[in-house]
Length: 119
Image 1 (cartoon, rainbow, N blue to C red):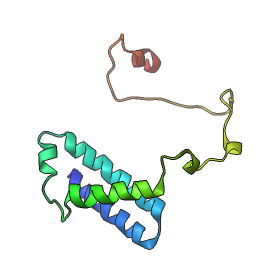
Image 2 (image 1 turned 120 degrees about the vertical axis):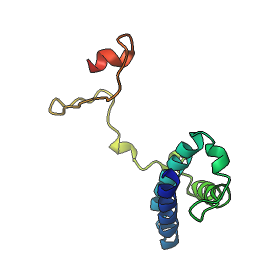
Image 3 (image 1 turned 180 degrees about the horizontal axis):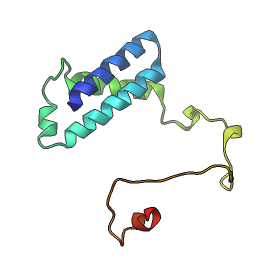
């Protein structure tokens, strides 16, 4: 149940927030939002989310707290990026010792761009 999992993430995020772990709380709220978004896309999902489930009024409780917390953290501001300039990797950097593998469980049509990459 998506919303059951979402309620666990949301409650854990609230606990982290009360303990002063703002970034961890935001991470849990993001996971909650992913479940919320997924449920909203299901048939009658938006109508279903209007009701209280798992003890949470999703539009009243969760969305209000999620958006308020996100605004307070300002994670979307450039200055909040966690990587100082000296940690940036040059775009032409190559390490011949590294190997990257890509796989997909999807069945791409022969004319799809991913088909030649994964063939």
